[in-house]
Image 1 (cartoon, rainbow, N blue to C red):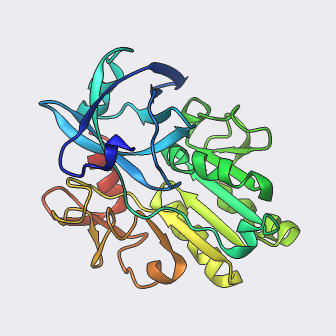
Image 2: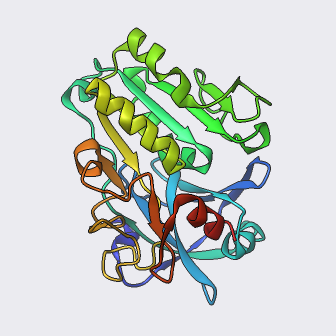
Length: 275
């Protein structure tokens, strides 16, 4: 039985192991079974501090893990924790990535694009897609921001400054890759400006597309309304949305809401989230 079926109260879990993934990024492992679909999220609670959503980046029969970039008060405190310390877990919540029939039978072509810390959302997805031999693209601002780069045998790396891999963005090579592989579906999680470019590419070429959105979340179950995006609750209706749903969301790739409810540009939202 999955102890995390409770939506109301976090289950206190002991940190089993901590992995230093890259500069400022750590993974926290918990020895416990978790019924989880790729793309869903869990709520992590630090008593007396706050609660935040995280994707599951490691998943086996008897353990799971989350990967955390240190960037604000909550994540700085989490990074100070040690094996044996306990944190609260709720979930999993939301709708994850889907698998068209061509993907389920192992014959369809798939591409997975992770940008920055969005890579943590697609790791379990990549492992589910192994029979499809997916194209894996990972982008980051600089080499020190890349993590999981040695986790997969075939992965193409991109950095904005050219410090590792190809200088530029994963979207720069999509045309050539699609001509080679004829993708049935492209999955992505990362900066929304990047994901909106992938969306436009898939719309142009009539490729199935799914993206995991990031919004400020509080309850995780669609009650508080903090994560609303054009009428869609990202925590409940998403966080993964397909091309048809995104085509009806005018804010996608342009705007997001602050904690106060103020609608701001994605750049302003990103600056606020980094505090």
